[in-house]
Length: 169
Image 1 (spheres, one colour):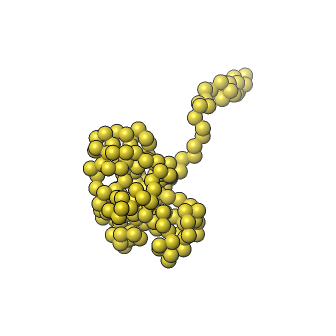
Image 2 (cartoon, rainbow, N blue to C red):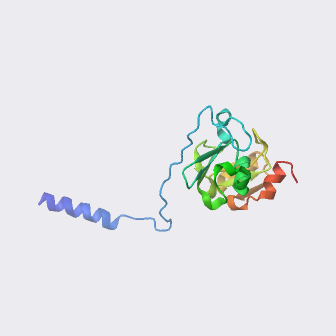
């Protein structure tokens, strides 16, 4: 009788447990930055370990990992990968993973779902830059605190904006 009661309680717990169906299931992805003291930014040729809160990484479909000293350098490569032909990519379709460091938590996050603050007082090793944050709310709070001018989603960051940040317009 006790086994039947336990089984009944067990089954009813799962049948009547509330589920949050408003939110789609999102698998938790752990992003990793595997660089050392010899890892150099492809674009700026800086040692990326010297300022880890600005590091970015693009992993190619062939498995190669390319590191950057800042989001600005990452976007510079992203928009013109053919300029660095030795990496072996022709377009953004050759990328399998794009990762940046969340400026608040200092954890690696998916760049393509992140938000980037433009025009803040935060300066990367490459100068004026875009500050990556995981959520729009975090980006808004950062922008307010550090005088950010605008917030961009990943796909809104244009080559022209990167050229502007580099002083090439």
